[in-house]
Amino acid sequence: MRLTAVKMAGFKSFVDSTIFKAPTNLTGVVGPNGCGKSNIIDAVRWVMGEGSAKVLRGESMTDVIFAGSSSRKPVGTATVELIFDNADGKAGGEYAEYSEIAIKRQVSRDGVSTYFLNGTRCRRKDVRDLFLGTGAGTTGYSIIVQGMISEIVGSRPEDIRGHLEEAAGISKYKERRRETERRIGHTRDNLERLTDLREEVD
Ligand code: ATP
Image 1: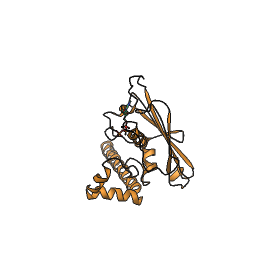
Image 2: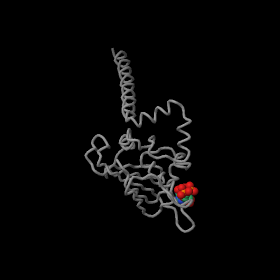
Image 3: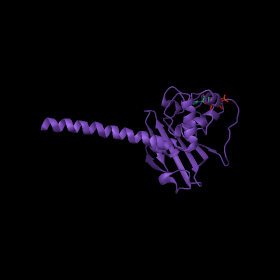
Image 4: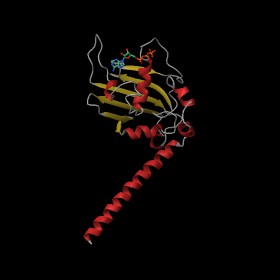
């Protein structure tokens, strides 16, 4: 799975519709101070389901919407779409057969985000699941931001293990196990409630 384009509109400094193309393997973004390099990276993380405003260098999630400038009024919606080449079929499950995958996230001033996978509305979880074990995604290592290398080097063994698990592709199975355990827990609770009710009726 390779990122080939980032389409932005109303996102941070990219108020007008902008397409950032990555025709070959992207290793870095260079440009003058304040031109929007980090905003592009923020856009990528945001679409992958980033839920922390702090990670996106803001205070609230609506801070990603263009807030206006001396010559332009603020806008009401931010939209970013990521286009991935999936010729290697690395996107698993039902998406393995698609040669191109488009993931879109939109947010308006009420703070509600909507996600789309190849044009069909989906949940944030569907987007996050797609990236689990690929090295991309919010917990992945494919985006190395400033300070991340020293953070990884100095991090706790369990966090280093998290990175290794992502690289080895087992993090998605751990996530699925956690989900299944949560569901089993809920089912157990429901069963206990049912037993209580039955005893009351008997
Ligand atoms: P540096 O090289 O200094 O790190 P950079 O190229 O990474 O800079 P960014 O941090 O991506 O630059 O962009 C900063 C610009 O984005 C600033 O001019 C800031 O005002 C603008 N900006 C950020 N959020 C918004 C927003 N919500 N609305 C309008 N402009 C914004």
